Image (cartoon, rainbow, N blue to C red; front, side, top):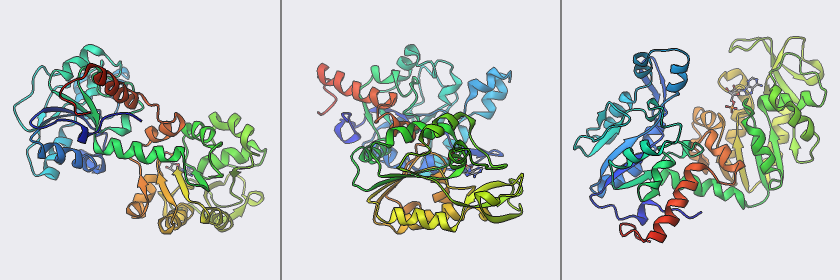
Amino acid sequence: MNYLTLEDMELDGKRVLLRADYNVTYSDGKITDDKRIRETLPTIKYLLGKKCKIILMSHFNRPQDDLKKGKSMEEVRKKNTLKPVAARLSELLGKAVVFVDSCNPSSVPNAQVVLLENTRLCKQEEKNDEAYAKNLASLADVYVNDAFGCSHRAHASVHAVTKFLPSCAGFLMDKEIKELSSLFSPKKPFIAIIGGAKADKIGVIKSLLPKVDSIIIGGVLANTFLKSRGLDIKGSKFDEESLEFAKEYCNHEKIMLPEDFIVADRFAEDAESREAGLKDIPDGWRILDIDGKTIRKYKAKLMKAKTVLWAGPLGVFEFDKFATGTREVAEFLAESHAHTIVGGGDSSAAVDKFGLTEKMSHVSTGGGASLEFIEKQGKLPGIIALEESYHSHRQEGVSEILL
Ligand code: AMP
């Protein structure tokens, strides 16, 4: 892919508009996971080293949905403000981060690091509005996109803005693109593990099938596949939306399904549970994890892999009682010599919970963006915008850029 990176740019003393993904997890007025903030530190520190003035921006939650539900603007602003992120970033940098209480300011204070208010509080953001993007661009000399997690959205602060400034990828964005692109020409055998609950895995399975040697299935997705074969999964959760797709692919030679399970009488941490094959699930009980025979079968397959992609947990890993399948596979991959990319769905949260993030080759920050990246061969709006900016500035011969 052709786009510019930080090291291609002439940045000394420049004003940099930096798009980050600060859509952090937040509850009871506190940031509960600051990983997304920490991950932007390499880019911010590099820019500080170049004596840049950094104007940060990000979205947070979905304020426009809150407004559609009839909440007042005041309530929506209060719930969706990025102000706590400015405070946390300031602690992490050991430097003042000035918060600007507007997502569309005409000027910003003369400070080295500023953070604008949540871009999605401006309705023009999600419309990819050019006038809005142009105003944001007027605050800076250069645009840097380090928000890989938003690269699947054609929104003004990731897409339209690149029309108005020389643009490049930040370190996080560049690392994500390089790692995930390696899956397009993987070392074989290439095994994918796809689990979780959301239907967003279907497109990924379709695009992976020609490239992978096998796809190991778990989670709610496995239940959907088993049901599509006409098997009785009793009270287990399945995904109606994926059922037709599952019917078409459930007998595909590359798809591996679980054979034994941990089942529970209800969806709860302290539910009564037992081991079961499909035929002995009690009425009304549900599958919440894979069991020993399946775990062994999956590990035997993974043993030969040279490349592994993992998207979505294999069971309800949030409850310790039903985390065994996900944990055992995570531990196995942590020790494996295969190039292991964890990306999409909640598998990255699971790997984090087991303290194994550092042992994987790459744990993507992208969630839905990582899955769409794989499905669309990297052709995501935010990345296309960087590529187009590269080509247009190349033609124009913009002097600030070192090509
Ligand atoms: P996703 O975001 O699509 O990766 O889905 C992750 C969620 O799937 C996690 O919260 C898991 O608890 C949930 N999950 C995985 N397996 C099951 C299952 N057998 N039954 C219900 N939920 C599951």
